[in-house]
Length: 222
Image 1 (cartoon, rainbow, N blue to C red):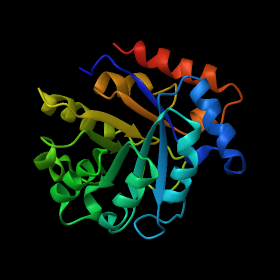
Image 2 (cartoon, rainbow, N blue to C red):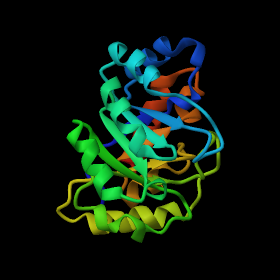
Image 3 (cartoon, rainbow, N blue to C red):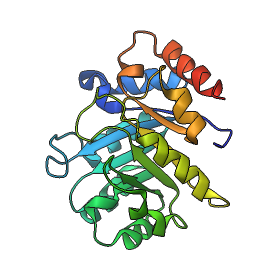
Image 4 (cartoon, rainbow, N blue to C red):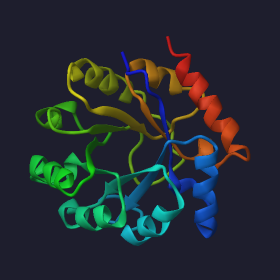
């Protein structure tokens, strides 16, 4: 079963990029604990988003945990820049590096929490050997690259298995993709505690009500 904590992590990808400072402050005031930053390089995924300069610009304006999800080729070349910019959590994809354990330890050496992510079609076995050292495992419940996609149900089984494997390990389980009021209880029941939500938060006029609704739905998981 999941830990008691429920962490809401709105995805900046769904924010109004012409008003980032006010958008970030708005979701923090609305009750979000983390801010999820989708970093895409146009190679690992077919989209291009932000770099360390945006993280550096946001950092002075929020006390939220900056959760940087690197959907990039050669993440080894990126982690230091994001750490220096003020990232708290840096998550890399197991599919994007040949030396996963070394990279995760490097992220931790830089003073950040280290996360590993896997795509919907990637088996959980690909990350089992690093579960002793990671701080977070991010299960993609959509194929990365674009917001607004439909939740892929096979993610539930992965989350349940990660919760079973956790035991005395300390990693958090995060889920990204298609999270909303209709499925967050299932995801919570499976064992997740960090929930990335894009349009379900930033796409709503009342962000506080949206976050509270998601949180209450997660808390109601049986």
